[in-house]
Image 1 (tube, one colour):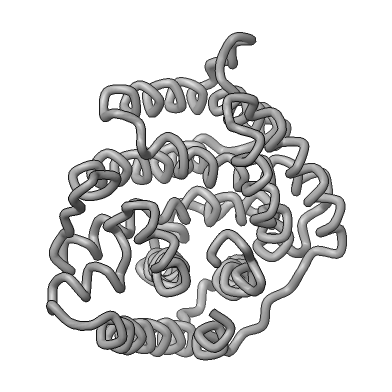
Image 2 (cartoon, rainbow, N blue to C red; image 1 turned 180 degrees about the horizontal axis):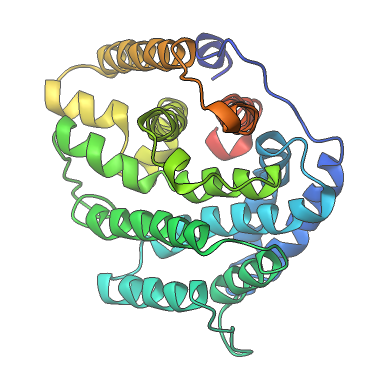
Length: 308
């Protein structure tokens, strides 16, 4: 993995929050609340360093704000690992419950931690003054991910895997990445919510797209072996190998070439960045935070046992 990581570097460096060790301790406590998980599963999740990922994604966040961010990052990995395997009706029911929580429904004492932890994040975020336009975007980002989880059921987690075409994969993987809610939260950390006319600007939307694509493709390149063992079909290398009927090494070569093209396109977008007038500085700050998400995500894989 180390040699592959060296090939996947970005021209902008990552940063780490100075309190990364403290937030990691908090993450371990969050994981222990998932009592439906086995002791071994909780041990594996603790080893994954979700606190470190939080510190890399939001390196300048005030420490109190890191708590809901780390709680949510921990939640998304556990939810995706565990609940994506549930039967379709059960998964749909989970999505309905999560949507209700996003609309303000409180958690119930008897509920599984999967829902309680998500509700706690909602309550922690409620401490901030969040415009309705932002909340609408945030909910849409989660629904985009939920849609992807449902669509993935036709391919993954079966004894005999089926694979989408590469074109189908590109659309579905975008939904499954779950990047967009965390891009939305970058606005909360910055203290500036992008006005609707700024948020909808093609350059902003394209930059968000690149963050999602690059982080998910880096994940696919670095987690191919893990996802193969887990019976997951939605992996760029696996889809290419199936579509081209080629050896794994050739599939990696094609995937790396595709990624290089995306990195070049991202850098071109950054070079051609428009002038946002009175919002210039705020947008520049937001763009920097998106860079941290990309480079921090890649740095997180270094020496990470989750992907060994």
